[in-house]
Length: 396
Image (cartoon, rainbow, N blue to C red; front, side, top):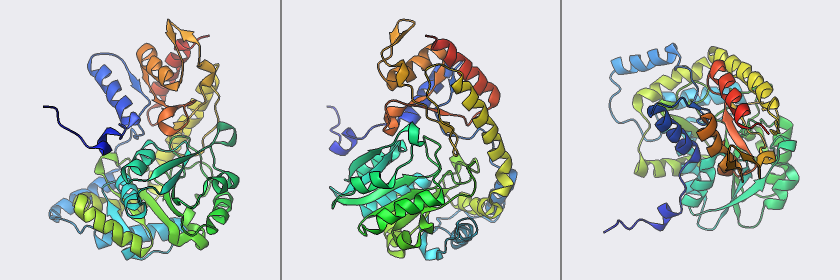
């Protein structure tokens, strides 16, 4: 007899970024030369000073269960970072350390959203926002943005989307997948709208904060009128090349933080003890110690922009953060290449994998089905070869 699974899991979609990365890995294992531009994972090693901090923690025998909320010295380092980089004052009791920023987002959504509540998702959105909203019983409400406006939400769009059922907005700057970064003035304009709706909370996912080429980063919680309703999410995976260490954190109103600890206590308990000690070194070292990675990403960004602009049919803007391009590829829809008809971005993504051996992610996964996401978190030689293949596979 087949197992009878819950309706919850039947309606949950698999992460298309992970699915495409796994498919690319399978093709590589079969002997094919596949270049994966699908996964947002830096190709750098974790810096030595962070690894050394982890080794020291092992020597000091931090092998027991950590507190669910996180070690106090880890949370103190987070408080210092938020004050130094974002001019945000938080108490350690407002900080919760989790098993990656994805868990931090899930925890916050779980404690804020009741069944039927509406959750605003400016699109393109990170793939998991939509599925997390479904998992916690919320109703996703997408707000479509376009490449012409650098995929940025406007105050008028936000105002038009809010209803009496709106409970939460999940917001991302710098953005995955668009690479857009909101200025302080742009956030303030959105904040003016949100001030009028005290029932609406904001999850501000700032995981790509340091990978920012537009100047000083602005955090949503800097808007004092709505700070108590902002849940600031961050972590170390992207900027510090620590994807496998699985540590993220949130800073929020004490009542929200306490509720998230309650959820986490029943689901995973505390984050890895050694990794928690290691991120103290990462956060205290700050952006200066990893500037070489940011500089490398910027060089790759400039390169990929030129390569994409050189391919007829791609509509491209210049992202100002993260490590993604999200071009509009609708010019290819309805066309046939090497016997394959391209009806949508998903078809194009699959075609590029099979024909060019380049893995991408369809924009459908991010709420913008006319786009494709390319990650440039890999070396310049691979990027140059990848876009050469893409161009050859898409000759009109």
